[in-house]
Length: 102
Image 1 (tube, rainbow, N blue to C red):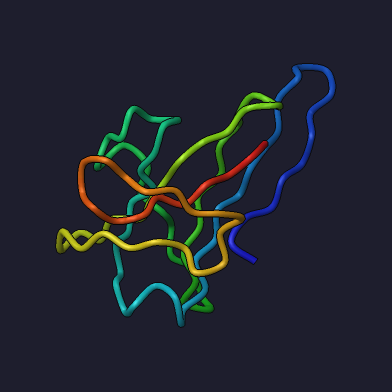
Image 2: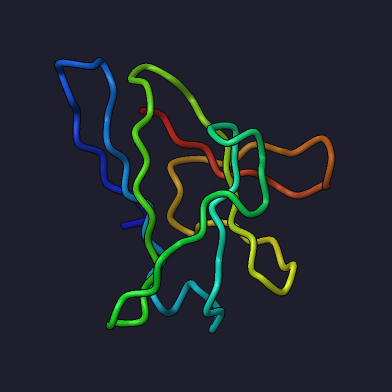
């Protein structure tokens, strides 16, 4: 599962943990989560590598919102989560963005 959501009722937000399993991380040791939630900053959200080889990062995002995102390796390779909820075309790259509804 690419991400899990845990609702925080007192703040109208959810904690969302993005996880890339080892087989989807393409052998990269450093991967960044890049999307609407961080103004597409290419380095502000590095994912942490776990002992099992997966990579993850957790964010708190507002409920009822839609976010587009992709992953970026430290080598400059962009890729999508193969298990994302949906995909939408990106006007800038000609590729698709992953879509998340919180």
